[in-house]
Image (cartoon, rainbow, N blue to C red):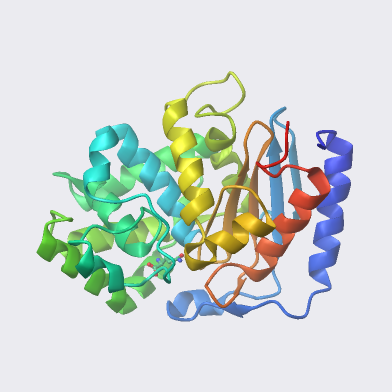
Length: 314
Ligand code: GLN
């Protein structure tokens, strides 16, 4: 597999060139009105390698709304805080349904299938909230992301948070439904407010790639470096990203890319090549199941050119 930085730079440049020429870019999410304003022509890709090399191309300095990619960071915070007790509230199976689906919740007594569909992520955020106020829980998630990325400038975009708070009816339905089962313990408005703000964190692909290092390096910020979470938990999160990180497109992403990944409706994807690199990719246009069309394609090209699939022998 490829690890030479010069070769990786060539590959990233090739992918960025290829994406600049694409006319079919998918459709920008518009159910959150503020997201519909983003330019679909954007594309960015950043790798942070095990040697700490940062290789970036395209609009890698433009912040975008990380949306569901935040579910990875919230899960890490929740596991760090309450450990395996989290798994009494949320499962670990792929759902095969869209990210905002409610159908399985009634049959499964209000326990969401996994922490990456909206219902599961709302349950995780509620677990972080516990007895604290939304401001404190949100502060914890944001501080953790800043620490992981090594960048205190990362912030929440208030316009995006406000936009989703005003229109997040389906999430409100999920939260109220789960409150009825006792899966979430706080008033749904408090949990939702925290969740919408967590989703509204804005980051560049370079910040995202840095923030994902702990998953690439077994819980540490660099190989043998300072530890963010236990190795066991980092491996568990990677397993969930591979099986559930792209909702009902998770099988397809694993098939095409072969790396743990988590997408968001802002068009971002965080992907992990264990032991090799953390990868941030972004393009706002989405495919039919709500994952970035070009970011998925870019990761497929990257995995192909580098041999970084987790299924390739080391
Ligand atoms: N905030 C978004 C929502 O709850 C996140 C969804 C996503 O990125 N897939 O609808």
